[in-house]
Length: 393
Image 1 (tube, rainbow, N blue to C red):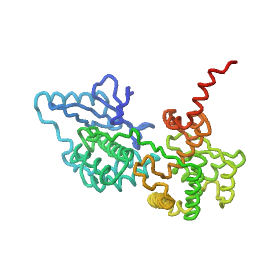
Image 2 (image 1 turned 120 degrees about the vertical axis):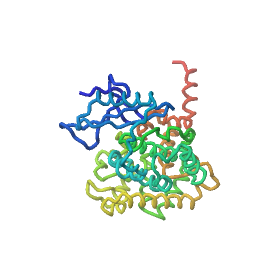
Image 3 (image 1 turned 180 degrees about the horizontal axis):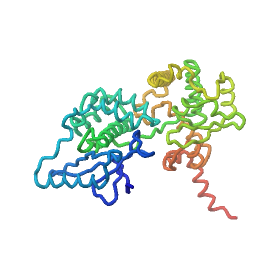
Image 4 (image 1 turned 60 degrees about the horizontal axis):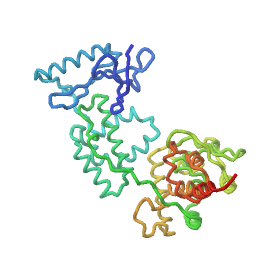
């Protein structure tokens, strides 16, 4: 029985107790004796302090933690006495980043909810730059240049750049775990862009929301309906895309939001105007999607789905520009986008005097700190609370 200790977050391996530098990792596909097969890896440093990871072998092949520890000891003795380490890549060509993504990353991470969106981001930004390169050819300096280009040339937000760097970091970690790459993950030496103060601050007043909805209704009934749902439920765009008819409880006037960003389901409440919107739509079968039906054609082709999402976003942006909601505004925190509708929902609740805890639950925030941005919208309530101290019982 393999006794494992804490998990190495960086590589996804579990340290084996009693054996220094020996790690164990479960297989996503290999089964041995009715459970996931496990592979033993070792880590050690050379005389220059460079960290190396080496795959030793699988439990199904007869390897044990003790054997892995013995191999590690041999490697350390060789380093200490100046002997040449065995070339573990000899006889096999090093894979490119694209090949690792296709052959190994997809196998390990393909079940993640964000995988398809990550594929789209990867093809658009990462593969044109690094797809044909081998991991050993990608340096932290190259990644820093990549980061700066995304910000300065392409105008991506700090959050988007952080997400792309995390994808590359994850691909390298998969390569490390599977023995396709040895050394240190170069992303670890890249300074991430600051994401502080990048939260969107703009929310719509009633006049602006009316102008936007009227403009959307003229351009696209579907996008108007999606925007209306977001404005009066606080649902994210992806949550609306994932909404099925069976998620709408007309009897109790609630929407069950199951596919959320933080994987925790929550409930949204249906107002009278929302009820009318849903009732005027052609209702599909319980398992069918509510918005938009044409998005689901093409046998579930995720690439076509992403293209459709982009088209919807482009239409939304055109209408925003047409009604001049972003005129003269350069700071992205104050520019209107689809997410502004969700932020407006939270802001209107705060202005009406709802507690931050209520807003947190309705928006599905995991931490109250995420909801604190709405606190400044209800200063009168705080003043009233202090002034009540002078009231006598």
